[in-house]
Length: 264
Length: 266
Image (cartoon, rainbow over the protein chains, first blue to last red):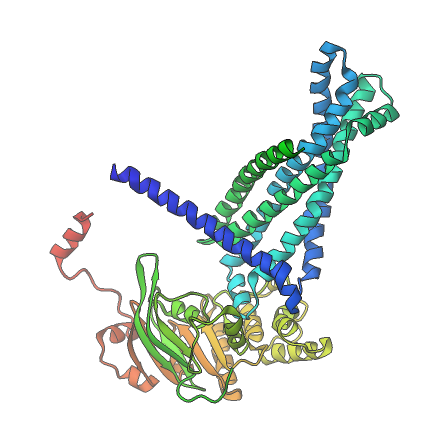
């Protein structure tokens, strides 16, 4: 009995410690992003742009390719069901709406969590193990400001951009399937998409993508900063950064989609 | 940092530290006189590196005070302590160079970030520091292209970048061959004679300790055993100090009964 209670207690404490650590880190990052620049302590724009390239621009091919496939699959699955009602005309609308509202932001976030979130954790974790973060602090330079804020800002800007690319390639994938299989022309697909989509579909998706971006950096950096115990610790942090951020992304997705559902 | 102070540059008062439940530093009291080179000597796991990390405030103690120039650094805000850090340099055990930057960028980083100097001035100052540690000509190398000893020298150049008043060394000769280690030692001696700095060196290398120290402190199990001039340490009759100086391994468990009990106890 005591063992069970001890187990529950230990895990609850561990969870609370994680949450409070994450909260502290987010508070510091918010300070250095939004408050400190007004006190003349500017954001490191050079690093930010570098991160934008590494985490954003370099991810375009993989995001576009995977979204294209998702678009094709959505077209296939949609046509399979809608053909029963002779309503294959609506496949375009189905692909367009599901990509912009849901799958574009979600797939992008999952790809980026695997690609960049893990890289953040590995980079900061290695720096922690090799005492580089201590060296930064010993010089009187704030590690959150130098290492985390550029990543945070880069993700905040690049996630919506990548999501737009993902939306577009998904819709193109759907259109490619429809042109090949349902005898539609490209312009028919374009017009059907235009009819089906409203601005809100796109904006809600983009808002979600920003939230996902913040989750990815927060978790990746927190895991990286809190690495203990050498190379093995870095490996563990990298793994858990991906697992935890994907979990939180889907959780946030549920919350935001619910909000949009009831307010829309 | 105010310069009108009397007493030692660094004073450690009754410092207690735990890692989790484990006691690391047990009521440590130690003075580091201004302008002197103090060597902290002790075996692995005696808490000497932890003490150094506390002076740099990379860890927070469980209790006790650390005074630098008579000011307690533990309750200070980060912002305020960073003013102190500007005049402190630290060479880490692994040199801790930023692997994504060249040697020159590494040394220039504190100058770039903490001063308003012109780029050309920073370049000259960086070259001077690199020359001081014998690394001129290696400005554009990446840390991964350097040997262990050269990395330490580059790390030292970075620690010297802001002309510190306090310089901390964490195991400067760890992982180096005897010749390279001797090179680092003579570099420390050279710095000590050239600049008026308070130097703290943590090491377990006896020859190196006696070569560079003005004062030596021997630590064991998180406690200070003795502090004194190299001569006093050499003549110390403290059993643990004698054991350390004469390189005698840890003895067998004295009490056989005690040993058996320790095995069977949960």
